[in-house]
Amino acid sequence: MNLKQVNTTLLTAFLLLPMFLFGQVKIGYIASERVRAEFEEFKEAESQL
Image (spheres, rainbow, N blue to C red):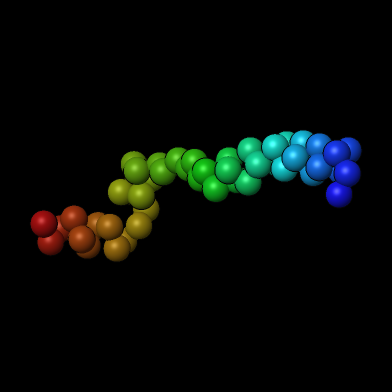
């Protein structure tokens, strides 16, 4: 491989690396009041406590 190919390969790797790293981050929201109000299983579990 010549120097241009090595530089292109390294540049591509450095540009793609953040996409792979941040692709694993999962951010979510749980509406806990809705869970308490709507799901029967939660109500049953809560009554057993």
